[in-house]
Figure 1 (cartoon, one colour):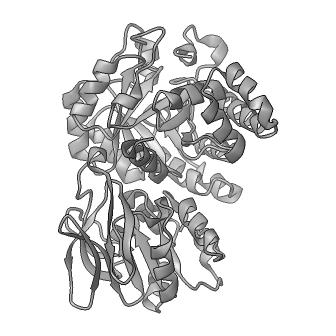
Figure 2: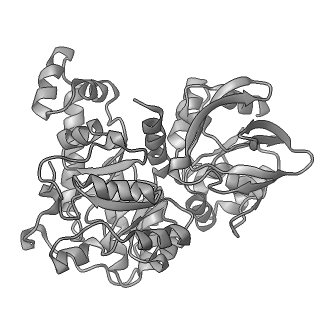
Figure 3: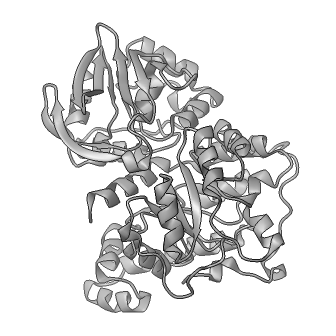
Length: 290
Length: 182
């Protein structure tokens, strides 16, 4: 792999143990940075609003992204539609720190993802199982996150995806060397990535939790399940007291095993975002891009 | 210091050198523990700095460093240890007499890898990720490495700072350099 890809994986390593927050304005970005976010995701509407508004959702206005870049000193990420490599070229031109090729936006291509090896800026992609994660890595993603179900405030899907990825990793670890060729075929991924996971017992890139995190307890749950950090989308700025909730989630991620501290962090956070259960939603964003 | 960022990479480097280590995530982890040296890892300085304060680690840590506990800061760790930060109104542990410039090589597209000399060690690989550099260093601060005419590593007494990430490369010589200070 080239040097740029290493540097891009390295940036994800520096984000570990942190919380990446969705923001829609420079104001929110400042609140997020002050609350201890290790990066922000600049987008026009947070997933809960995208879900409510319906219609086609696209990459954000580059001007808005630039204003957010000027407002904070931490890394700024932004989303492009699955397969929309021109949106990605535009974000690279505004020197974004990380591109999220995201199922939250309407897919631009129902078959092909972006060839991320053609870019100098790093990409993070969603996955709900090991096959998806390794396919995205083969395409050049230098960071993975669970898909979860964005904009719901319901953690069940993120848990399902994180557990599934971990289970599939453990399964590969236990397989004999001569079974790995078949495993690569089953997973529909390159053999060398299967071999890496078999030998190392982990993904070759950093893996965050995303989709449905609404409380400090949700964030700590994902960390205990093996996430290396957490994305929080609608959970913060759709809640009663965003600054306070954001701070509590940051601390919960650092001390994710300390139940006593988690108890005090969970106190008086004001109203959590109104959640939607997975049975109540018509659109499963996680099914976009396999 | 395991509040946020790339601390596991430092632990792996220490493991390979056969040095035992433990994570500090809250005040209790620091209390009554013998400590020969402390590493502040890379990550986001605003995040780690805030957590240091709010988890009540700031004072005990400052006192330890004042009493002479050797400390090694990489990237964000360098910023946290600096006496001044040129482009940030925050001030953290103020342990080493330098002025740091944050994100001094630009955004992620400005991140780079190079090989450059490190005083007393020789040529080593250096990985810079949205890295700072040392804009000013007071007398008594030893300059250890320069890249693109910028100071990227320095030492004052038993305080060592690097703008790059030795923990992201296979080379263990900077960690060994730090252990020799401990």
